[in-house]
Amino acid sequence: MLIHPWDAATEDEALDFVRANEFGHLIASGRDRDVPVVVPTQFLLAGDREILLHLARPNPIWAAIEENPAVLLSVAGDWAYVPGGWKVLPGEDDPRRGVPTTYYAAVQLVCRAEIVTDAAGKAEILRAQIGRLENEGALVDPAEHERRFAGIRGLRLAIQKVDGKFKYGGNVDEAHRRHVAGRLAERGAPGDAAARGHLLRRLGG
Image (cartoon, rainbow, N blue to C red):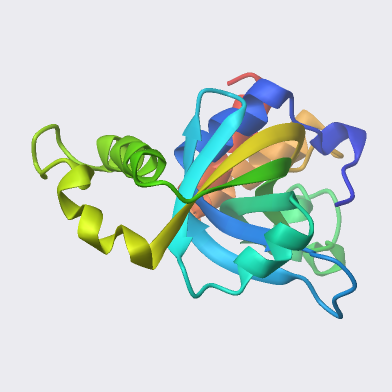
């Protein structure tokens, strides 16, 4: 993806976003395919260099991964439409001449995939995912469902490259960004609070 210098995220910033948004699209190009296989999926960022997840055994992505273990995990969110009129400070110019845009965060992780087929390995992945999402003791240990493991396969993704983009008005001055932040607070549409939070954080508060 195109990342201008003013939108570039540090690796820590990008991984923090991924950790807070553990749902994305896993993309496997395979070999000699007309289009890649794209799977929406929940996942777990384990530490800073490994992704854990599981998918149904009939999923078409397995063949593509077996052809080529290089995959991409794409995570995007916290987006908000910014009307053109908001891009013009009051009294500065005709608001109709403002150029609209969309604010958003996006992280792409280039990974090497390892398919997990043994029961112990699947249980370990499930245990880690459930541990992130459920209260301790809320469910039995995944190993108790081992007879159902034949229907799934696990994945361990070793992260090799992190590309992060936080497109929140970094190409304009602080006055313009703070004006947009105020308008986002006034509008309060879905995504506005998260986008405003990123905008202000990248301004330093």
